[in-house]
Image (cartoon, rainbow, N blue to C red; front, side, top):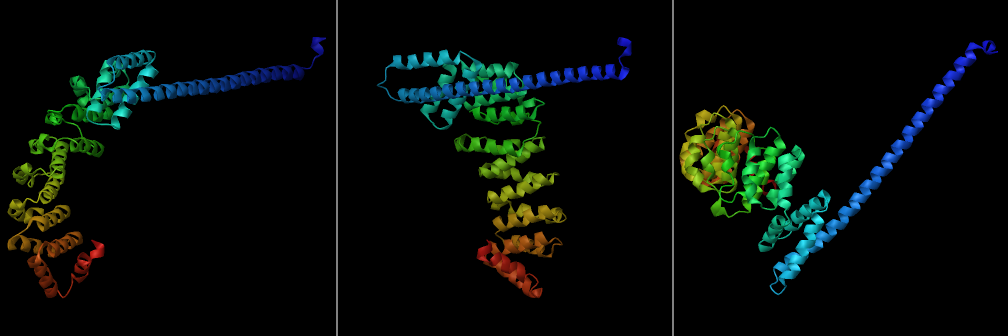
Length: 374
């Protein structure tokens, strides 16, 4: 009987079975995938709900404790009760500890002075500084960076030596976070790492370091000229930039040597720094370097701008006048602007030159003299 069943029928039956098995497998996979999505979403929502509850509680409690500490009439027992409650909640899970740290950082950003110190003390009393230190010791590079940032935000100075090790890290983010942390934590010598630093200083780092230094007592700022002779060109450029932005006149005597630097970026920034510091005493030094800078358009432009700020003798003005014959238009235009704005004598030199040249500079003079374009 079996022998009478066509072969094609048997083959078709086998194909149907394979199809059914595959369909069931795909169906089961789809059910598992949907279940995974639902479980993940439920878990995420549950975590977010717990985090929200903890965040709101921690925020209210921290605000209350800060107020209590600044009010002498509040009994110490109330503080201890709240502290024990926070310690118990923070010890329940890593989620609770992280939310607690985040709230300490968040609240600290909105206050200052003695109130800020209260939060730094709570960070230690709740043993959360150890939580951040553990991230540095055993976490991924992302966790390490997070731990460094937390320690810096909450002013834990004993971590300075631990953080300093990451200055030479191969990971750029860790290097940047460690440098910024040292600037914030090391009150005595916030930029001492520059003595041996061999890495780059990115614009992001420069902006953040400047921001934190700007909040410090100007009398405690280091003398940035200390690093003008560094072998790391990034350090020299950074130091020049900081000397200029903080208008550190103590750097003026050390700027002359940098005018002859082989790196044109440093020579150019030196000219900008001299102009910003209004170092009139260096005008002769700059005038003597006309021939050295002439073939470089960028240096010539900065030189003209600088002399336009600090020049005061006829020789300085005639030096600028020479640049009206420079082959680069940008240099010539800046020379016109420098002479026009320097003083009456310089302006007359410009106008006389324009007359002799049959008004070739009239357009540029009209431009620099138009108030709406300034």
